[in-house]
Amino acid sequence: MRRVRGQLFQAKKRLHDQWLLDLNTDSHNAIFIAGTARSGTTWLTNIINYRNEYRYIFEPFYPARVPAAQFLAGRQYVRPDEDNPDLLALSEHILSGQIRNTWTARYNKRIVSQKRIVKAIRANMFLKWLRGHYPTLPIVLLLRHPCAVANSWVVKGYPQQLSEFLAQPALMEDFLEPHRDVLSGATDPFEQALLVWCVETLVPLIQLDPGDIHLMFYEQLVREPEQEIKRLFEYLKLPYDPAIMDQVEVPSQTSHSESAVVTGSNRLAGWREHVSQEHHSCALELLKRFGLDTIYSDDPLPDTQAVWNLKR
Image 1: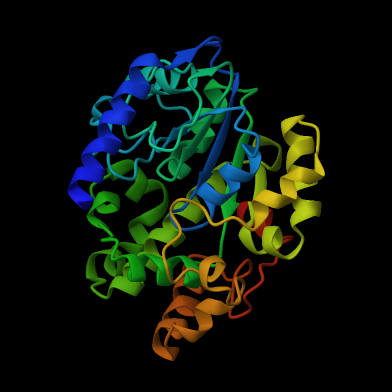
Image 2: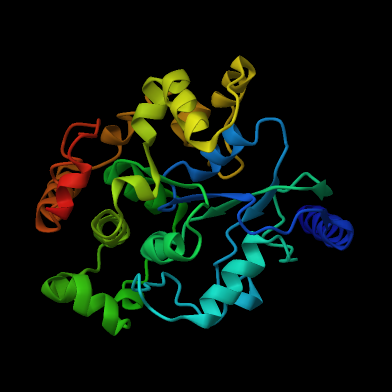
C-alpha cells in the first residue's frame, strides 16, 4: 500500500510540474532561506508562506536529486569573487522559476505564481557569492544550537560526508587546513554532525557582513515568535498579519515523530535529554576550536550579539 501511495504521489507531482506556471521570471522576485539541515528552515519557510502566496522551491542545490545541480559537491564552497558560470546559470535557473523538478516541487502547492521562496540547506558556503550576484535578493540565514541539530541528524540517520570538505582545496586553504586532523579522523556520527554544523556556520559568518542577510536564531523564534516574525517581515518588506501566528505551532513536513514540536517537549532544551555528557563535552570542545563558543555554549540559548565578532 505504501508503494502504491508513493507512486500516486509521484504521478501527481509530475502532472503538477507540467502545469506549473510562473508569470514573473525576474530572479530578484524571490526569497532565499538558508541554514544547516535540521535547523528549522522548512518551518520558517512555511511561516513566511502561511498564505500559500509563493511557489515553494525545495532544496534545488541537491545534486543527488536535481540533475542540473550534479556538478556541485554535496556541500559546495565558493569564494565570494570566484568566476563560476555553471553555478550562476543554475542560480538564475532556480531564482527565475525556470526549474522544473519533482524533488524541488515536492512541497509546492501553487500552480500559478508570480513570486518564489527558495529553501536551501546546501548553500551556506556560497551565500556571500550569491549576495554579490544578486544584491537585492532577500536572504535569510537561520541558526540553531549545534547539539539540537546533531541529535536530530543522528535520530534521522543522516550520514555526514566530511570527505566533501576535505576534497575542496579552496575550502581547506581558506578555512579548514588547521582542522584537517579532526575532519579526517572523526568517526562518531554525533561528532561528524557537529563538525558539519561548525563548518557550515563558520564560513558564512566570516564571509558575510551584517547588511548582507537577515540573521535569525531558531531559539529566538521559539521564545519570541511574534517579535521575530515582525522583524523578519519588516526585512522582507511584507505586511505583518496576526494570522501568521497560527502557522507557528504547525509541525513542518520534515519533522520526525520524536521532534519536540510533535511530542510537545521542550523545543529549546529538549536535546539535553538525548545528548550524553561525552557528546556534550565534544560539542563544547569543537565550538571552542572553531571559535563559535561565543555564540553557542552549554546554554541552550545563543548569544545573539556575539555573531559578528567572529569577523574580528
